[in-house]
Image 1 (cartoon, rainbow, N blue to C red):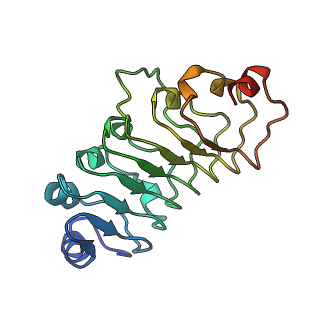
Image 2: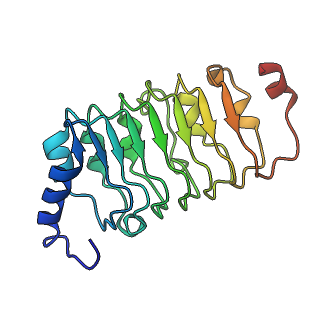
Image 3: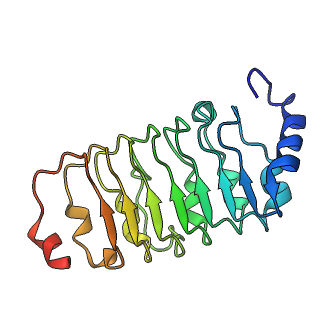
Length: 195
């Protein structure tokens, strides 16, 4: 909705929700030139939406994704690829039903690294897949050690230089690790023993 104001775009969100929601559970708004995420999304589909794709909406990076995204209580797959995001809402850490999180090709320099987290603050017990490819992350996010069922971690083309955080028993469910195109120069013996 190029050039639309938030108040003026409300009707456009009504149209988007009416035309692009499939069976009240899937919403694909890739490349729709969105300038913000409307509260109508979680007001109407808080208990039914399982798939949300807001990828290729570069303007979202200017305003960010609202904390209220976590009000989508049934959401299993969230795609925010190529949105120009420099951060993501902390409320995502509370999304218990989320299975797949795709944040590829954004401008993330950190992933919840600004504060301490533990098993009480991270509720991502269903998350098995995360894609952080093509960002600017310099380390494997420590918060991921509190994601007990993480099976796939994709961090291709970042600035990661150390595997030390992976040398913990908490990553025992990890089956796929993609760290190609990073700055890793050595593999710790502790990591090799985990394989």
